[in-house]
Length: 167
Image (cartoon, rainbow, N blue to C red):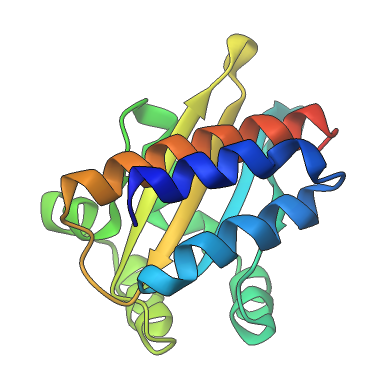
């Protein structure tokens, strides 16, 4: 993915009237570059704890249902790390830098069975402690700095367009 791809996506954002439309457009620009799926949403503190809500999620139904049924958000290291940093990161970088729990190892093995090799996470921090997160999931390691820049820019704009649309 190149910056030109991101710019075309950003220029098209005003025509989308729902977060699902934004998600479909986002996925269509990343898919030709080896990206399998994407998700974007946010979290906030509630009296019963932190909750995560998706603006859009283009995961296969089987993956999404398994993620929700097994409460993998509690074992997926990407949302946890997103709360701790404002810098984008990849799943492979995160796995290489942290000791994983048994539940995280099981989650990683499960998600790899869907062809996932890497993911690029763009955390977005808002006043008041809310945290946004857009993740582009790839079938290849995400190492190219230009690709990362393009994903970063497109993710920020996708997130803010979804927020403007009311989530």
